[in-house]
Image (cartoon, rainbow, N blue to C red; front, side, top):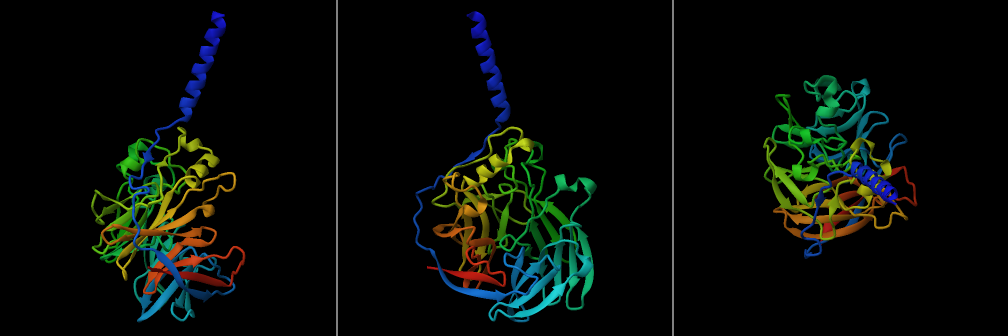
Length: 392
């Protein structure tokens, strides 16, 4: 009898040790304002813009930029298929022209139009920022983003997944790109890994700045999958950077070259607690656990400042409540949280899920907040459609 009891205890201890090996330091971020906020403003859909595409272009462009060129409102987008930027008259919807990089850019990932002549292009293959004079079709210079790290740069320097609502940003005479580490941040790197890169337009000097907040990503916590470790940035009216980290209900504000953050609340009335993955061996975390952690929790996305109305829009991808029915990112409903220029909560609006809206292609015009509209039931590959939302 004693031998059987001893064996049972031994089995339980071994099972406990096995479970402990699977567990990790779990960080839980609570929302102190959940259900307590009062809305005074909302967004209403009021208009659309339609752009006809050619035979080698498709909706859901990987990158776009709205800007003024020669006094005209211009919407441009990147076509990776033919390595080109397309320029449209935003108001008329007509194609103005196409600029092709040729073989000078191997894999274009993003760009920033400086003026009527010049554009910076991010080459994902070479990890460089290339300046073109697209009027004269001349490559002016090429800035490496690998620093001095050599072959080790992918684990020591940020990688970039930029898009329209998380773009290359111009602050003063610098371009700022928000990158990320695509896996969990090691505890030893939490104060040394910098996810942001700044490039001097005149000096061409490259700097890496801004660390992940330790209270969100420290202690060897498991945030695998790429989505949770993707900061999104916008610029405040006074030239500071405002970072939206997916698991945080707060916003992190800093000057371009500062080494500390000011933290302010910027959350949703509907969002609940968010926790890291409870699995110790981060590199071996099963894909279904990674996916479930992101899809079944409220996670924040891009933040955009509306210069015409003096408000911020922060996107929230709401949790899917029944994984038996769905377990994919496009099934997450989308809330848009509205804040004034001082980050006071004004309200929020649910617009539908990612099957209907591509929030990576969202930008501001005088008309309002433009978001690319998708039609799953009508696979229209010949047009790119944007719905315009206005404050009410």
